[in-house]
Amino acid sequence: MRSNTAYSRILLKAQKYISEGILILDAESKRHSVLYINKGIKKITGLNNTEIIGHGFKTFLSKENKVESVKKILNALEQKINCMVDLFINKKNHQVCFCRISVAYIPGSGKGDNYYLLIVRDITEIRQNLINSTQLDIINTTLRSVNDIVFNFMQGLLLFRTECEVECSAPNVNFKLFDSNYKTTVNRLMKINKMSEYKIRNVGNLGNISILDTGLN
Image (tube, rainbow, N blue to C red):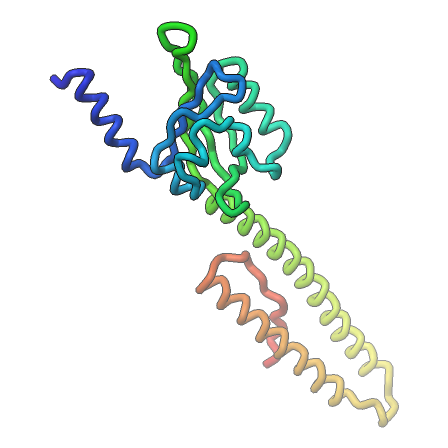
């Protein structure tokens, strides 16, 4: 059975390979100064040791964060409790990344020996995918509304034509011109529908976006 020392060496070695960032903060410092970072933090933020270690944790929080999210993690640090919160973290060159931060309070043997362990995971891409998904849902809903409007309009035109054909006996009424323009419009709409179907098959499912299917070819 391995000793605690062996496990400690394994943990220290593992910190070099995990993709998540690790921060150790001084729990007794009013600024919650950073005492240690792993390579994961450097990769996520683009910052080096001198740009992070010794600085207060709050300085790395972006102004883009919601007030309640910042309060949640700062309150956890003040009250020495565990929490998990999603926050924007400042990167190098004034960029930001969206991270899921897990905070764990680690009490020591006495005052001055208490720390916080922060596990930081970059979820910027996950967040962007969710935003894209929401935008696709909005597009889908909009297209369905447009589909209903166009369908009702085209059906109204057909009804109007039928009424005219029944009630209008004048020889100069050109139904052929109407039929030709109607058919051209329908064909164009069908092409748009095929583009939507191609999008569904090759890019992603936007829902059933059938703009029109009248049977006129």
